[in-house]
Every structure is written in structure tokens, then in C-alpha cells.
Amino acid sequence: MKSDVHLYAVILAGGSGTRFWPLSRHLYPKQLLRIIGDETLIQQTLRRVLRCVPAEQVIISTTPAQADSIRHQLGEWKDALQDSFVIEPEGRNTAPAIGLVAAELLLRDPMAVMLVLPADHVVQGDRRFQSAVSFGVQLAHQGQLVTFGIPPLRPETGYGYIQPEQKIRLGRKGGLTGYPVARFVEKPDAKTAMRYLKSGEYYWNSGIFVWQASAILEEINRHQPELGAALKPIGQALRSGSSERLARLYHKLAPVSIDHGVMERSDRAAVIPVEFLWSDVGNWSSLEEVAPRDKAGNVVSGKVVDLGSRDSILYADRRLVATIGLSGMVVVDTPDATLVCPKDRSQDVKAIVEVLKKQGAPEHLEHRTVFRPWGSYTVLEEGKGYKVKRVSVNPGGRLSLQLHHQRSEHWVVIAGMARVTCGRRVFDINVGQSTGIPKNTRHRLENPGSEQLHIIEVQNGPYLGEDDIVRFQDDYGRGVKR
Image 1 (cartoon, rainbow, N blue to C red):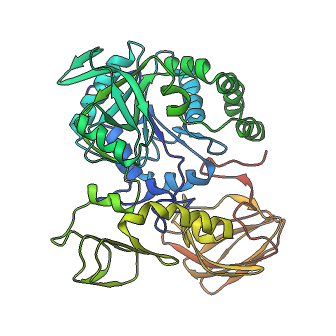
Image 2 (image 1 turned 180 degrees about the vertical axis):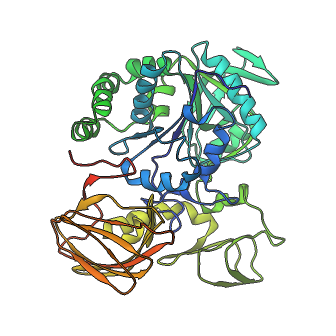
């Protein structure tokens, strides 16, 4: 499609990982996974929207907890996307996130049109997607709030549905037709979903939208006046860099989705039934919609040896997984957690995550290996008062200048050369050498060499959480203390 100079792609990338546990985690959600193909879902999403808009017209809305992992995954585009992030202090659902981006866009471009889409959906059929976006922009210029409707393939109870007012046409383009929305229906029961499927009058709600920034703000002010009134001071705090004020204001917002809070109440909602293939891959069993299956109907990924299983999802992250004679099962193995359940119970994975969360189990939060813009770290062992990590720093990479109030650290170089800042001292240490970092001491680790740096880090202290970090300088745009 020919890019509209006023069209901006807004990728919503603030969701947490629950239904794809144990592969997804709260700090490593579905959008960061390779569900289908060689790229993660957010990489596929970005590549898709870059066929509609240039990189400088892409905005990524996320939270501080996920920004580092997203920047790492989008490293191929890091220069073009350097100023493309809008960081929410915390997730407050889609209406506040969209309202904040819309308010920011209006300052940049009063005629801005937003293509809003989740980072974690699978879309197949790029040309059809581009055609739908082009038509959506046309209707958005008429003041409509446009969503894309997906023809239902089965009586799905996990999706919302849209019924168009088919007696009224808002426009036609290239075989596509736009209609006013007669009504939205939230996730129906199985009997109702079957009735919708047989009627041919309903579509799945894709959660992909096109509208003018000014139009969505008008509807937010109309249907969510408290949110609308709060967006101006929140935007001012964001632009001024006042992170504490921004966090305080944002925390007061009621979490509300754009569907419930605005679209279902607006008389400007429009739907375009589309022809591209779409799935929100909401749980493990839904992989069958988008992933290739073997002759026995199995979706297999990783180092799996199977004898006689059928219609199952078999996923091995690193270790060898052997399965025998399974039918309709899900088996997912990761270094620190394994899931085994029937496919028809895969929706209940979310309940498992809630149990882990209540127990304070680290397995709900993140993987043992965590990626950062400068490299990665792997938790090797931890117990009361101590944690042992392997830290890997990319050539030329460096961590922030920081300190910890609750813990001391001891570093041992096992590969490469480390440049260490500790207080006022800056010095290099090589393989086999070590140094200690007392608590409440400004310090920094960097790799000045051309090879990967690996160290073993031993932490000691009463609290060893990743939020015990005070940053003073940072190369990656993360919040620093002024």
C-alpha cells in the first residue's frame, strides 16, 4: 500500500504472559516468543506494519518491565526506533495506553491517523492486511472508529464478536465493505457461539483498529471523562521527564479496555470484514491454527523424540523430551518448569500462573535467562541471602552506572576482559581475576573488547530483587536518578 503521511502504527506491547506458560512469563510475554516461523511475534508485527508506514511513524507502547526485552528483540531496527517508545509506568489496560499515545500524536501531527494493533497476534496474508489498512484509513478520515472483523472458523468462546449493521454501507474498496457496528458481544457461551457461526452475521473482534487520534480522544472524553481529563497532566509529566509524577498520576487511572470503555459505547464504531488469516493464539491448543502439523496431527518443536502420539502439542525448549502414545495432550518443557495437560484444559494454564503468583514462585515471573540491551544474565542458583548469576556482556556493551542499597556483589571473569567502575576507580580485570562491589557503591560493568564477556556474579544481601537498582547513567534510555 502507498503510505499515508499521517498514518502512524501503534503497537501495543504491554501484555503479560500467562496462557503460554511456562514458555511465556509475566516479564517475558507471548509477544517475545517464536510461536510460528523464525521470528518472534513482535518482530513479525513490526515487519508487517513497516509495509504500511515508515519506521519513524511506528510507536511502541509498553511498560518498563518489558522495554528492555523488546529493545533487544528489535535490535535490527534499533536506530530507526530509538525514539519510538512510549513507556507506561504500569499496565492500566488498553484505553489509557491508547489515549496517552493519541494525545502525544496530536502534538506531533493534528491530522494523525492511528493503526492500533497488538504485538502478539498472528496475521497471514500481508497484501490483504495492507488493503484492509488502506480502506480503514479512508473510513477513519470520515470520522469512523474502525475495527477489523474476522470471519469465524468455529464456535469460539474465547473471542469477542461483532455484528455489523449490514443494511448500511459506509464505503467499498477493492472488494471490502465497511459497515456501522450494530453491536459488540463479549465472549459468548458455546451454544450462543454456535448460533453466531451458523447465522453468518457475526465476526470475531480482531482487536486491530484504525482511527484519527482526534476522534478517539473525543470518544474517550465522551465515554470515559475521568480518563480524558487525566491525559493532559499525564502527557505533561511524560514530556517533562518527571517519572515520579507520571507514575503517581498513572496509578490513579482506572484500568479499562478500549473495547469496553469506548468502542461498545460509541455511535462511530465501524467494522470491515477482512480476508486475511488471523489468530490471537490465545493458548497452547490454538497453535494448531497457525503452526504446521505432522502426519499424526502433532505440532512439534525442539528436540522431541516421539513414539505414536497423535493430535498433541510437543515443545522442547532446550532439553530432550521423549513422549510415547499421547493423544490430545500438551507437553511444554523449559529449563525450570514443565507443563503437561490435555489440550482441552489449556485455558486453565492461566489458573496455574495465578497459583504460582500467590505462592511467590519465581517461575511465574521470568525465565532463568533474561535478555537485556547489553547482553543477558542467567540465574544459576539462589537461596536465602544469596544469588549466583552468569552475566554475558556484548562487545562494546555496558550496564548502567548504578548502585544497590540491599546487596553487595562479587564478580569473577570467566571469559573476555571486564572494565569495572567501582566508586571513583576504573580498572580492567581478566580471566580468573575478581573484584567486589560493596552495597551503596556506584559501579558499572562494561566490555571494551571484541569478544563476548562472561562473568560469574555472586550477590549477597537481605533483598536480591532486580528493582533494587538506582541508575545514574544509562545508554539505553532507562530511567535514571537526577
